[in-house]
Length: 268
Image 1: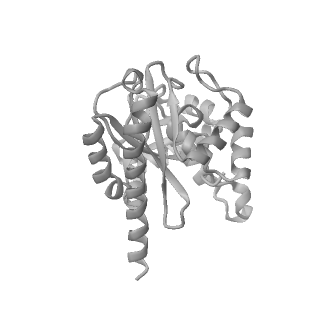
Image 2: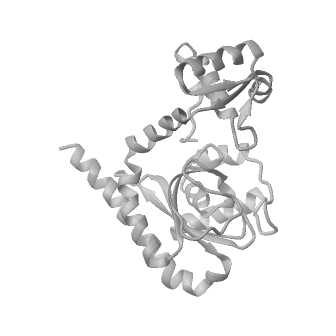
């Protein structure tokens, strides 16, 4: 998939395995594992204890983690890695004014995400009321196939990228309405690509309904998705088509135009 960098895409002599291992150790931390011992991190990452110990000591020296009584925790400095991504892409600069206007128009939450492997990752968000049991913020990850933004991003993959995704993802049911049949999912993605927006009704969580549209770069390539999410009781087929979808599509187009204009200015 285009969102994934594979070792096979570069020469083996150019691949830095120690960097790969260091990043895998950072990614071992999670809400379920906010602090780790060397042994626990080694088990999660499938690395040897000596390798994990050296990585921990290096990360601690660099200020990315700290330790208390043999347990290691990430520090706020790790956020600088994510901020570098957001600031370099100017995502907040392009999306925030339009997202704020969309929230004012709909009085519902809106978010922007990108595709990373089999998940979507939130890169911008303006919430109104909390409608999910899951706390979402920038950096949160959700399975692409169960979300409206994920469906939009998957629908705009190339044939080979989608085949790779379908071969690697394990579809699990979060609710009774989650699509877990790969053929059914593939057919739905084709329809989404044709109509230009996606809807996910109670597929991730009961009571949650969201719609999403694609954000494109200067070449017309889909690089992100924006959504409106609300309690399912406030969304119905009529008001979605007549009220919410036009506002969402207009917002996605405005963001895409800003991205394109910025690129054109940078080339002058």
